Length: 307
Ligand code: PSU
Ligand code: MN
Image (cartoon, rainbow, N blue to C red):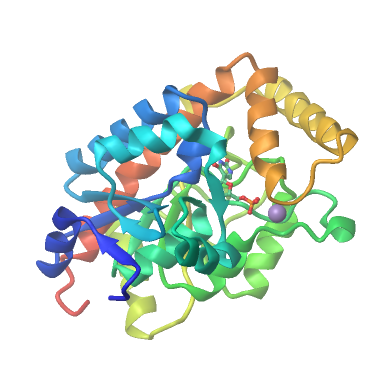
């Protein structure tokens, strides 16, 4: 353990006793959803993980400390401060820790800190990826590099078509990241269960996901594993509503000249506004669904004595 890392007692105990733990990110709280739905969702998602037999560890940086596991009070603090908290990617954490600042952890930094704390699996909503127009902007999320390098299984609902999903999958292939469809042949598109692109493998049970995770660890392959768990059909967004909203949000983003780390939070908020909040309801439901699959998979991973 490094001197910047604080593992919450309950989480440390679970890890020491070889019990299942699921990591959760904090950028989804501070930058991905508005208050108070963000706090409500963050607390409920922890409950979903407990109900499915694992211990939740929401990950964030507070006063320069890398936190694996937050208290209810800390989750509330992150939700209330929202985008005033620095969005922390890999490049940011050394400076944030050195200066004693707070940082909201993206998929990238959540994977990093989960790995430092020996947590094997992480549930989120959507990952970052290759942005549309990346051939000129070079805007490619650090999440993809982290998946290439850090051995944590990430359960998500795919990625939003604010990204170029085809190029995101090409990038993951180049980097050797397995992309698994959970109960589907397709890679899901966040608000929709299908993106028009195939996953590399289809898996239908948490036990099979655990087998793949364990095989990867036994061989000591360096990267992560990406699981695309489709949004339940009853919560999907109709394509004729969500697609024009995404197109309009991207247009506005370009018109306002928004760039870099502001791009994703801007697009998420704009899509929510343009769909009158419906996209937020879908977003919340798919996070619960991912937490359930991640917890069930964590339970299966820990049945294997050799890990
Ligand atoms: N996509 C979502 N919701 C999110 C994010 C992405 O649908 O909350 C957040 C995650 O924390 C992800 C980050 O890791 O945005 C990616 O940001 P960027 O594109 O700047 O790398
Ligand atoms: Mn970016």
